[in-house]
Length: 467
Image (cartoon, rainbow, N blue to C red; front, side, top):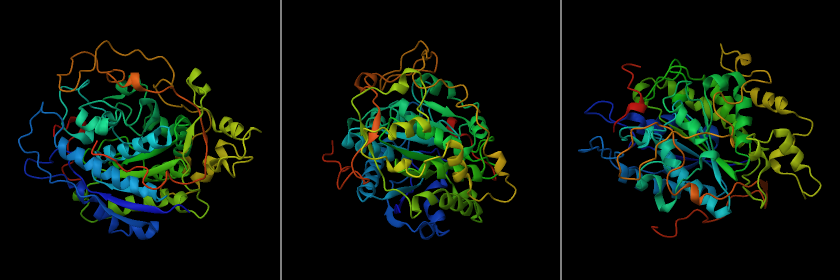
């Protein structure tokens, strides 16, 4: 059994004010979720709370950069320390946000961990919006919660995108985006960057269980991965209590199956849940639904047979999957694990003898569906789309003819798509294939420590937030 540690991150610093005289309510989310016995039902350790600075936009104006940037940077450093301490104990962190800017702290912790083990940590980004606004594709930036994916992939001002001199925290090829709407404003930018996506239509066509397995395969070259969940991935018909509700989302049952599939591996290092706003949930019914979904989705983590976290390290040979832009299938990974030169098979593959991908998906899909939801709607037959409109990793993508401005410069007016920011691509190490090494354990005591300071009136879309 993997022990869960629940950490509160009640920050609202990354959102604009709902009205000129109010503050975003998502800072109340951790308390609202705890009120529904979340910790007891997860049998989790209480890892406490990282308290944010006071929400005060002051005299911020468009063009000033990200609002609350200094406060968000300080908070991200503190949050990374706490996440690191949880992983050092061999526990599975569940971070309760707060707005999506909590991803910066998680990303910093993951980058420290990757550096410590000599590998890269990936990101599964489950969100209704791409949160990919940055100075290269917008006239100005302001709300970090609408820019978090851009920031953690190295785009934007250095005081947020390059904490401790680390930039990017996640490489583009190590990010999988799930659940954005088909017409997301920045979908072409994601495509041009080579970030793998599966929008809602493709997710539904393939099914939540298969999508989770597919996400594993996309990150096969990573030492492990972190999962970010913004509850606005859910359709507003079932979850309107968010700052930016957008039609066309998924159902609670689909999120439950997706989460269960993503965490059902020792290579998943932790999860964060963000953007739930109790101000839009006066009777607590939406909080109860979220708790039910999280508890059921995390069942593989707390199951008696759950395997402790196991990080992967690099082999000195290039990965063959990069030649054709296709991730290794589950069968191919199983074949590699059974080679005679391997001393033992990785724990993540134990119990899969004789099972194909469908059997495993069906095992995940045996979760209970709420009344009125047909399980047949969640899993499609083999042969569905593997990522609509997004080139595979390793395929050729032509960036639009414009340069990303340096920090502090005005953004250009050309096309929105671009490649890596200046100075990032040159420092990227070659891709390598990975195999499990060492005992199934956490990174080790102290590994991630910093050694030197070194639906009433639904709110506007976050993509247009200005502060």
